[in-house]
Length: 246
Length: 325
Image (cartoon, rainbow over all chains, first blue to last red; front, side, top):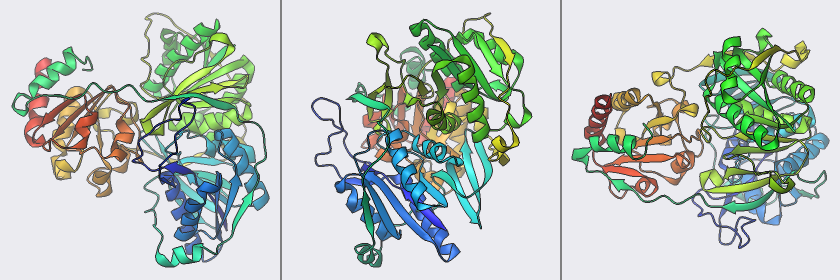
């Protein structure tokens, strides 16, 4: 079975967010980039399923410029077999979805996995767009994925519960915990990753449909108002009369 | 520029987040000098749909096909796309829910529309532009996004707009069919399992949330969280370490890789406030932190704080809420 796992290159969770002077772009200077944490669930689960099936391939796909390659190598070190990088800065979710769909069309993949959303843009869009572009089902967000032949059983989170969904390949799923325990690379993985194939392809497709005109930081908090523990009941009065939230 | 809004229903009731998007849609329609029509999905009653008039909706389309009771991505996408075509909708509004995001992203391709998810404000439409403010970087930033195609889809973040209630106004409810076939139900769920919600309040939609971390010391102490939540009419939540060790179920985990919430009030009990936790809750309007460690990083993100033992403080808070009446 052929798995395609889409990963995105995002600023580390602890990054202090700043922007370029015109506020149109995220300021990458000095920022550590990591594999999007949600995508790690997709990657590890694909590797686990491949191992359970005793065959098949896991291909990682990233839409990004050359500076994303260290994280693509990391995905190979975790256990993917080969990688494809679409050589373009991701302009918007639609642009990225088109690139993924194009790669998927040519590659004949059975299962396309990705994280629920990226922690930078928080779009939660690409999975559905890829499914629709390819005319195949999408299950999002998926908390569990098991395969039996060409049939997959997934648990899909809904507000207040879950749905058990069965689909046949090919399909798209966007992954979240508790799907698996994301793996970290071991030394052998890191050594073998260096020689695994990483193919670079040029982007195709239409113009993006959205454009960020300005980034801003959220309004600053006033600072915490401390209430003495022995007077805890006072807090409730403040929440009613001052903050007006109860 | 007609506006169509997707209304999610469950057990006959319109979801709270859908009352919010109905309000959002009618305000967008006002901006554009148009009217807002709704298409309802899930199990609804005609009476409750008619009440959407209170949120400024003039007409509700509803297909009573029983298989639409549960979420089916293929069928919902086709149903909403058909309604959008029939109404000539230029703007489609949904909740940024698991259903809204799943169908919204597919619809953006089918309707050749631009899509903004996680919207926190009404669009700015002056000068022929259409700009939506949305949350980004896990609540650490806001982005103004210009939607550049004729058709636009907006998925509105929960609890970012208050549902308006104009008592007495009713919407007309019209039967609607998208001629769905069996093929549209190919990805229908085999089974739907609903979790019991503490106090009956659904966490992703809750206006008030009481949350516990490792400082609660064990699942046997959760009655303190639940008592305060019950008194406040709040939902309960927890931090990642708590769900990792199974003190509480995964669906209560808020944070970077759990649920993102934005209630009016978030009370964190015995949670230190790791950045991954903050990512899930930092757009809450008022944050209260109770922790015995005065150096807990969460105090920096809080509006109100109590440095003290949760086992001592929580019963006092519950008592104080009860005394408010």
